[in-house]
Image (cartoon, rainbow, N blue to C red):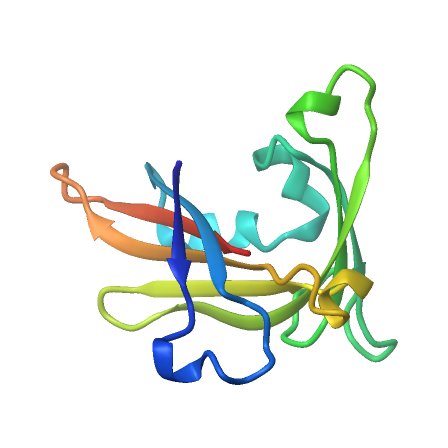
Length: 157
């Protein structure tokens, strides 16, 4: 996992009253021995999120009545119920409310896909915490002639 801080304001922009002088970013990537379509289906299935993400206990997904329950859509809301490593013994669950900003399934050549969601609790609306997670998939050919997938995730806060 890479962690870095960046100054998200240039010197000319410091005069406005927005107080976001430092942005932190954590990122990591891994190669998955599976086709991009399979990885995408597993990654965006909210009912199985906890099967591949060790921190997420469950996901509460909120869709409009006319939509198919559990089917991910841009603009939808979800609550990630998370147990952080330091609380693993106690089982303390933290709920993180998120809004889906981008949901681009695999397409193009080489195929790529993008899922982006943003933290939206009261802390976000009061500009106390801003966080966005990007999960990006890129299809790559392996030396056996099959398809593998590069999974890249980035969290900015």
